[in-house]
Image (tube, rainbow, N blue to C red; front, side):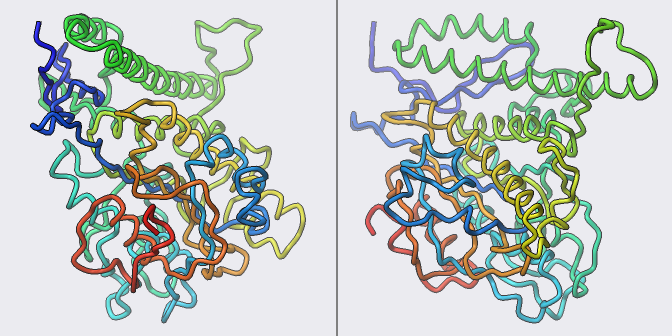
Length: 462
């Protein structure tokens, strides 16, 4: 039997009217350059946001030498993969300019644009295309979805700082200078979108019927068994791991939905029939403000991982929370994130802000560590990603933006030199975004926002 055949990168396992994009296997056509030499997997770009800044002495490493061995409390969850991470101090944000009274309208909207809204058109969207959408325009031609935008909270916050359009408070992705990109907060809808599952009667995406229930997966696995016979042992393992991960995500989403239904029954005074008298009441999980915020965020992170693993998209942006409105009962207190950041150095409020920061970075670490465990090509999925976690403010207490907190993870297909803390980088937010796009192979005809250069120290060649 011939051993030099390849499978097209867009091959699918089909069953029950649904199509699952396969993970990237060695046998896929994109691994065949036509000259017998393997091509490198593509680079993916991911962005994850937290508002209101950090407690700086608990976020920044003490020095470059202790970064890997004694990380500060905020990033402790990343320690197993710190050799895959890069931190830089000295990245300044966009100046508030004429918007001195609008820190929260600007912190998210400028995060990926590195640009200020047009002061003469404050009540409408008039800013700049964001870095994720620049990447989507370049990389989206190779994938089913040009980009994926996720959020934990509805993008409906209403406020009027400095007369700015309300969309600036809850959007960071802008398809054009005048068009904000909405983010999806329902994991079920994300799953349907990723796998293109449609209601066969209406032709529309169905949100009420599980697209990946066990019976459908059984049909898919029947086709997978035929496919497995043509694959190497390494590819067989990848295929099995992929199908297991799809099942895992579906089970998580189903569990969240079940808890929501049971919590609603409990509120109405009806005890679910399957419960025993000795059982504790089911945890009420509100999306996006549930008691188990970590579980919801991890489902969204899993969907990001799956989207990258299957090459369904190469660009994903996840707004972990928006300015104002978020609280973290899972951490043992109900204080709003925003109000807590105005701590005036009160120890208890400082402790709570530090806990919120640590929690959000833990969710980022959950995603990054999962990527690190997934094999791809000669390395891991994380090796072929550039993941950025960050905030649009340095210090929420004073609304400063001189040293914006960023964590980069992944080697970008070998384009980035990780395992380092650079304590004195000279650059701005636009410089960072421009450099990341260049590392991902995105052609640029102009800098991003206020950028004036690329940050040489960031790249593997620097």
